[in-house]
Length: 103
Image (cartoon, rainbow, N blue to C red; front, side):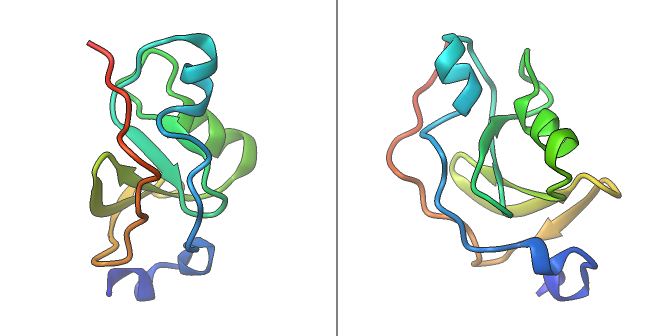
């Protein structure tokens, strides 16, 4: 598995998602694109194509290096630190339920 060669592999944990969509956008009532899941603590934020980029903001605030493509669980991760994709294989996080959609 690719995470075995990742220097941040120890930060990739099994987590419980913090929300069914971008946590901050749900509070703001703001649309998002593609939720991302922090594999260190379970924070769900929106991707860099979203207006607020909450997943990147979470990385900058916490230093948690790896996110997972989360809707649906896509089998890949992203290491913010060195901007590299990580193959998570079958180590994906189960969704809490359907992710709300914004059109």
